[in-house]
Length: 249
Image (cartoon, rainbow, N blue to C red; front, side, top):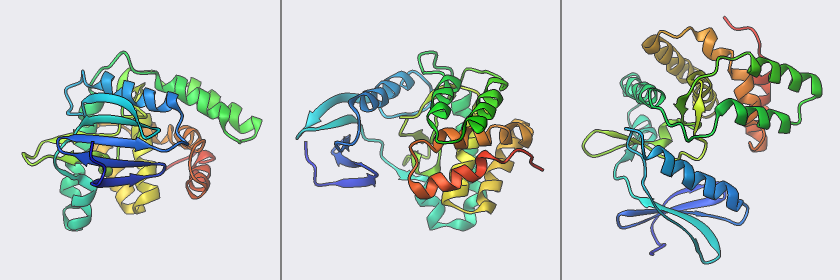
């Protein structure tokens, strides 16, 4: 394998291209269990109709774990957004259509979203009263078995040369209520973009799926709490502000 073509850098990992292969290399801070779970998720979602990276191998290279997949040629939707902001509405439509297509899939082997959130809420540093409230809200949410990506954002959508789109980075994939996945994407837009773009995303999703905003927003404190567990400090403070948000207009 050749490691002189870095195509992306993430916290505690680097992604390389070697011909028609993509190598995600993790540093020592990643647990073996998390890396193997990511590879397993990728293998599971290969069964859906959405184009995803195909797992070729999981190995240890120079003492570090790596997941090797096929390389998906194309440009991220984030890059397209940034090159021509005037087309944000057009590409937001495509972005939401793709997410809806993901949610229309079934993958029974994936872990359950609500069970995962239950565990993560228990690990937060919120006081017992807040944790109890979050657990109670989660227990009252409608359970479904839709495929949820868990980190659906423009950086994880590849626009291929033929115009078709692929979805990468399935490390957080679960099956559950798609509204939680939408709440997660809304929070990502709010954190990394602008309030206007976050609202455009939410409006577009709710319009296309005939979903009340309140249905998505009810998930937001639960999702924010669960995401705060492993977030970096700045993101954790942002997410904590959403945990106590109860009423929306």
